Image (tube, rainbow, N blue to C red; front, top):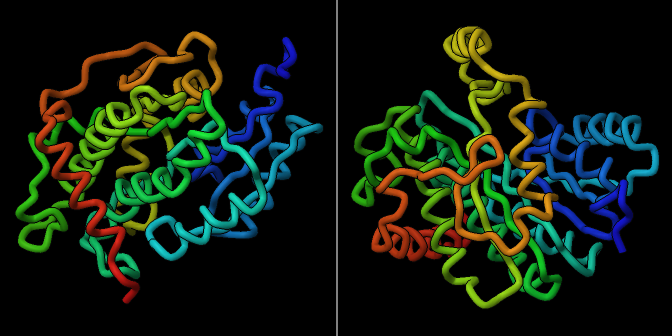
Length: 289
């Protein structure tokens, strides 16, 4: 039963990419609202430090972490299994982790890294936890997307992994378009259930999205910082979609600044959404390398 000053009391939440930036701010806000929270990160030291910061802000927070590399399908399966061992319900899943890579890289599964981390992780983790979300309803899925999706006119199914031609921002934009196609397709498939799914654009946020790209990434971070909003500001819509009663029952929408906005025409292509779903199933059903 929720309390007036702790509206998320009794709610169990899982958030990826929560050891920095908007993910950490979102996690802290949910904990302050009383949520039982599991954060996901790759580094035990960073996860522990994040939990310490959350507990300083919310001394009574019920928060733990699970280590996972979200570009690895085996790691995602382990994450989902371990979470379900620890928790009997899931009220809120926030898919937040993502990155941009200037040079083409591959995951441990041999999949182009942008696709693996920014889209397939959302797809696989959500589907692995879908039965738990359904049994916990009303529950919510929140997918962090981006206005960068507008730079992708379509999903290039003939070169989905950028093997013929790779450009970092093009791959990133396509992955954000994939986030929206996935969100809208999942919302349709979940009609008649107590699970809602929405996506959001956080704004141009001063985060570590360019990290791991050497000097060019450092330069872009410095340049972006001149125009970027704070992580606190960027997290507002994630927090809103995860906790506000105003969006109870609202599904299949794209939000910016806590308001639904229109996404690109390409993001509403039902044939592309169906085909992407099928390809995503194929990717996430591959045997381990």
